[in-house]
Amino acid sequence: MKVLVVGRGGREHSIVMKLAESKAITTLYTAPGNGGIRERATCIAIDEMDIEGLLSFAKEEAVDLTIVGPENPLNEGIANRFQEEGLRIFAPTKEAALLEGSKSFAKEFMKKYDIPTADYAVFTEAREAKAYIEEKGAPIVIKADGLAAGKGVIVALTKEEALNAVDDMLISKAFSNAGATVVIEEFLDGKEFSLMAFVHENQVYPMVTARDHKRAYDHDEGPNTGGMGAFAPVPDVTKEHLDFSIEHILQKTADGMMEEGRTFTGILYAGLIMTVKGPKVIEFNTRFGDPETQVVLPLLKNDLVQVFNDVLDGKNPELDWEDAACTGVVVASKGYPGTYEKEAPIPSFNVTDNTFVVHAGTKLKGDTIVSDGGRVLLVGAKSTSLKAATEDVYQLLHPHVEHSAFFFRNDIGK
Image (cartoon, one colour):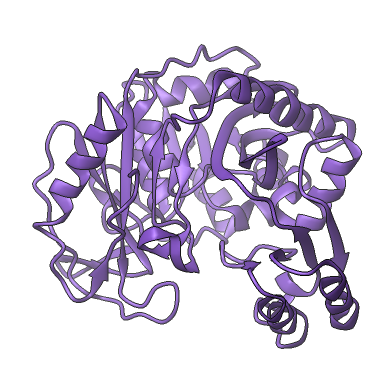
């Protein structure tokens, strides 16, 4: 098989690493890829948003299967175009990807199909949004309706923070059109976890749970980021909670999307929070999570190509998971998620059998791999327990990341 992975981040590198294990693949392409992906796949200089360019390449090279990593091309309809041309693609259509592309759509969908989530209201006018905040008080959550690269959510602990967030989104247009509508939600207290599944129509095949650490600094302090590390599986999620989440959230969502005429094929990601009333949905993504993918896929025993093909063909992929744990810590550019410098040489690591390095924001400059983004690398380890995996990651990190250009959290998985 010839396989194409669309994207350039850590999630895509992790997908490529898993696909590279498959004996069914003869040629593995990534577009556009990054400095680390090139070691496992042929990087093609086509931007992930150049849908027609990707389509032409897939046709010219007779690509058998395309997998889409990031959310933006999904919401632009890459799956629709590939399907129109008769090409096999594992990705939701534009209509199904709206579940991530519009938070107001997602909230209305959950309300209609009785999927547990926070109470909410939707606003396009700052004055009305502020009046709602004055009425409800804080803590409260302000979300840009559209795609904002993981940065469009403000958990406001005070009314002042909430009012400022409304000004930023609706008046200052901090997130451009993505923030032209805002969703304001009740604050839910509890531990968060992520649950992803391979989905085709009403068939749902869940993965192991993961927990992402969003705040930039130790002890969950600092601004929200795209994720500073993750671990899988999550030991405090009971079988009862997991079964509830699969039946009342993932399955109801797949069934509801069919009812809506937005039949879902691809990865359904539920960002969940464990409340005193049970699991509730914080958000949906319509693709692999980042950095959760980097700690979930290493635990999968199956050939990933076999899984994609089985799901697309309506077959049960019989997912098989290692009885192990995986921890991953993000190495980020100093200043992230604010302003930061690029093109710093990345550190090298003495990787062992149970450790690995995933590239996110990197590129090749001459013969040197340098930083090219906020989240630069994820350093991961797999072991018999979460404690052991976490210890292995930090043993690998501490001797090597003594560099003023980068930082990482010291408490992922602890």
